[in-house]
Length: 211
Image (cartoon, rainbow, N blue to C red):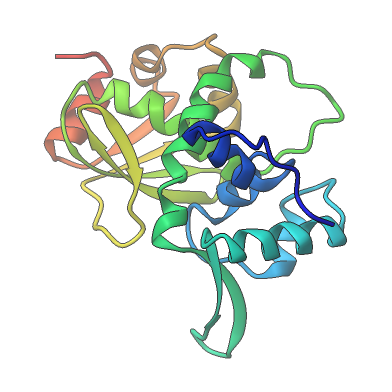
């Protein structure tokens, strides 16, 4: 079945022709931290059918957003990974996650939860707390983790860069931070988050206020 198109000669409309379908940007979210197997994607996209997932992956591959390749740390397995073009969408997902954080004030009992879903929206909170101090930070939330490079105006996912600080946040505290019920500086002052490291960015995150 052909995909719908806005049929508009406009960059935003053309972008949405590619990534505007239901589930598409959530697939990008799942691949933001590295390659995933089909079964892993299906498990971490609760509610998606196998047919829809297969269709979305096929479309994204055709559009050059992701690629299938063999990943073999110990035994060859087939994985999906973002292309260079696809990785350009990660900041888009991060911006959406940051914009949507206030919508997490209510946690419904029917809501699915995965700990790695906290990482991208927390990145913007940490970037602001870093107060313009650049550096690479490893963020942990209940066993899920990612590495982020903070610059004055953005945070980017950098899986292969050595961290200058390690930040550990519990799910409970992450809920409070994202919903806006807890400020980062207060969480640090109360010992509700852990910041390890002696770098400039670690020092600034331990203060939690712009210099």
